[in-house]
Length: 450
Image (tube, rainbow, N blue to C red; front, side, top):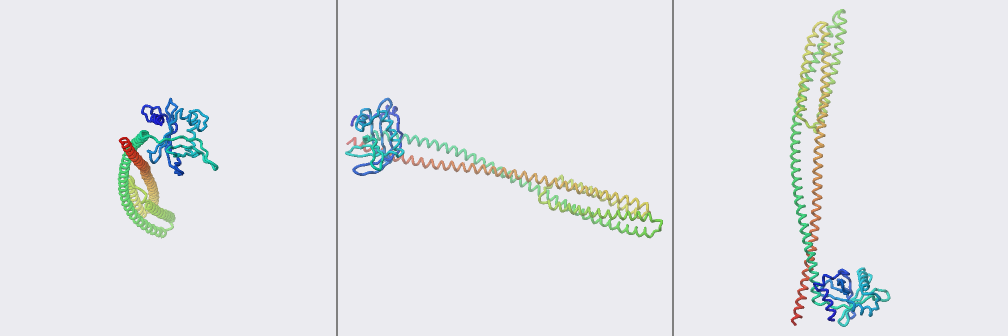
């Protein structure tokens, strides 16, 4: 027994501990505790260690819930010879170690089973295979209760491992906190940028809306003035045409009342009357074109943006139209004077009416130019609408990036919460092991003094 204790002490010696090699790492295995006909399954940590350069191995069992319950079996060459003879083994010491590791791996896969049998104050570890007929025992080893020094040594080693794990988790938590702080700074920066962009966008939209409103109001006033001028011009032209028609009718009556010598002049006068009729039809067409232009402008008021250069161009064109209408009025007054003259004056008036027709055709050309300007204004509106859509798309992309960052922060926070709960569990385990250590030390002191 003293020899076994001395071999056990080699595995807790600080100098020899550096030569210890772990053959089977710590793994929780189910072990049936059998004592006086009672069987109770419990979980034990199983580990197999070997000291290099020596044929010395140690099998150590530690109860999962109570680390003070520890059983040790230390085997050297002499101990293995006794086991080999008792159990009829046919392998060397190294072959026994390899076979033992394979058996424990099978126990881990639950292909084989473990039982700790207590009999007459001694314990025996049995490794067996369950069968429907009879359990087949592969190996059994004598297990001794670990000394207090061994228990305290291994508990301290477990505490050191747990402390290292706690330090590693603490450093990892600090790293996570640092990353979360960096993420929060980035999020705050992005929020500031988004707020600034939203403010700039709102300010730009307000400026565009105010400018467009002002341009629309100006254009409404311009259209109103144009309509008033058009109505006055139409009334004046109708009055002139009516007076001309009356004069033509009077001249026609005068020509028919003349003598046969004025037959040729009468034919010419009829030709002039036909020209006047064409002039009336052309005036009607001009009126229809003006009404169509007014309808097109009214249908496009809600979509077009008006610029100051376009308004000034419309004013210039209207001034040109007014000058042209004044010229037409002057020519018509000349025509009225010439109609009162002889047949030569009637011929000259016919030429003046032709000039008037040309001027009206020019006015129709001006109206077409106005339609082209309206199309240009519509294209400008489409361009500004496309710019606004691009700005809206940029805002949506920024909001998407903000959502992705928020999801990343949430994942980091959840990981932080899981790590914190894990640290609390480790702290609780360390606390429980320390309490057990204190109790064992107190028992050891009492037993030592007694």
